[in-house]
Image (cartoon, rainbow, N blue to C red; front, side):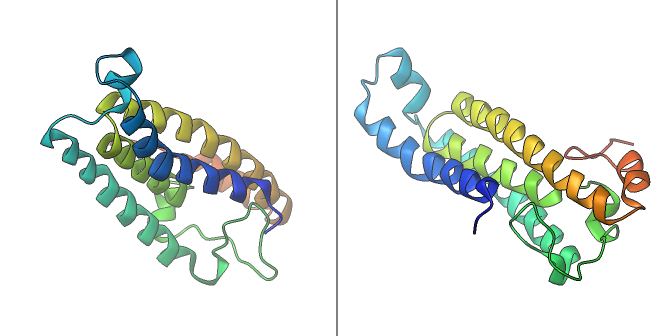
Length: 159
């Protein structure tokens, strides 16, 4: 795994799933950071909803991608352009799913506000990763620019 984007998403996932609970236990509950990081009450389990939705998006994207699936921004040898299944509605459903999962974990392990901050950071990260991947797709598949122009990147259009 030489792709730095793969390492970056692993670090992001570890910071959310291990770092937030660790930090939340070590800050004072009354401090500003404590109010951001320390989970309060059972309402935090509402964060499970974006986790489940995100896992569904990841599964749908992986199923549609099939043998072309790779965590890297470089394409597999012999890969094909996938524009069917969930890829008819969004170009990067797996990235969107991971953003939802990180948002939900952030909400469950800290607060809803921290979850939203994590979602924003994740959205920025995966938007940049998608841009790198899309340069590779456009270089390999002449039909990719037309697909890119017709299908939204991370957030599906509401009809």
